[in-house]
Length: 178
Image (cartoon, rainbow, N blue to C red; front, side, top):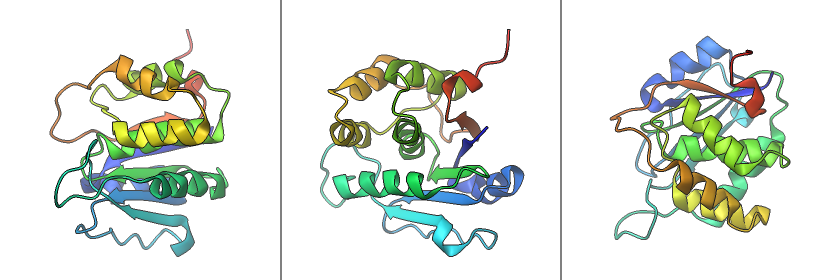
């Protein structure tokens, strides 16, 4: 079962090791240092630099279409033989948006609302970056369904930092068998 291991920057080395991740997606602001991960081949580590903002703010970098396209291309390059670690600074917004976008990139038949509910179940603190979601929705031609689904699950519970969690490519794999 291929999956994303999502975490904050403070837990990235531990998460990569624990899950034996082969690929890492780093989404930090431009001024933050990208972690050095000796176990990850250089071509298997994608780092993007933009701030966690939903609308323009002086002195900050908005996520742009090219950033989201790079996330989607990186997902397609992943062979899915081992987990992919996705992290941002706190593991709450940019990383959860990237995981949500990643599942829909690789499994376009997944229902947006079902996936948003699965994200909420896996990570009660998840608050996917709405600008990233809007851009991905436009690229994928989903007519606002991604935006509506993420809006429907609302802001996650307050958390200074998210806890590492697993997010499978098939939302049905997330829930325990009954």
